[in-house]
Image 1 (tube, rainbow, N blue to C red):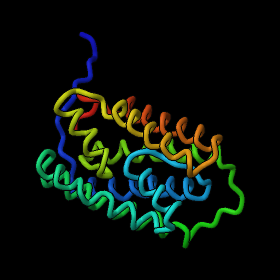
Image 2: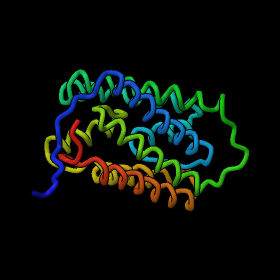
Image 3: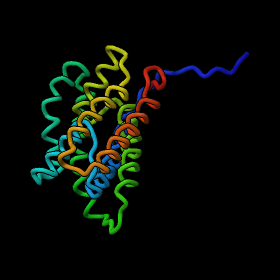
Length: 204
C-alpha cells in the first residue's frame, strides 16, 4: 500500500497564533524598513502608506494603521470576528515595529536593488505565516483572501495584479529603475504567496 499523506484538520493554539503574529509581523516590518531606506515601493495598503509617507512625510506606521481602518467592516462581515481581531493586531504590530526597528538597527550602506528584492522575499514569507494562522494585514489582503475563499481566485494572483497597478501609479515618486525593481519585487512577493498559500494545500 502506498504511503499517502492525508491532511488532518488541526486547530492552532492561542500560543501558536500569538507567536505566528509576532514572527510574521517582525519579518514584514523589517521588510518595510528596507523599503523605506532604499526608497522603494510595494503594493496594497502598504504601498499607499508609502506614497503618503514619501509625499506628506507622515510616519509610515501611522499612515498604514489609518488606511486599514475602513477594511475592518468588510472583514467582520465576511471573514468573522476572530480573523478581524487577529488582523487588527497584525496591522497594529507592523505599524509599531516598522517605526521601532530604527531604534535598534542602523544600516550604513545598502544596495537599494538588493534590499528591495530581499525585503519582498521576507514579506512574502511573513504574509504566508499570517495567512496560515487566519490573519492578514488588512486592506487588499482581506479582499484577496475573501475572493479566494468565495470564488477560488488565488490570493497571490489577485494581489499581484493590484500591487503592479499601485506600484506603476507611483512613477512620480520614485525613479524609473526603482520602479522597475519595485514591480519585480512585488511580483516575487506574490509568487511566494501563490506557491505557498493554496486552498487545500495547508489545513490548520
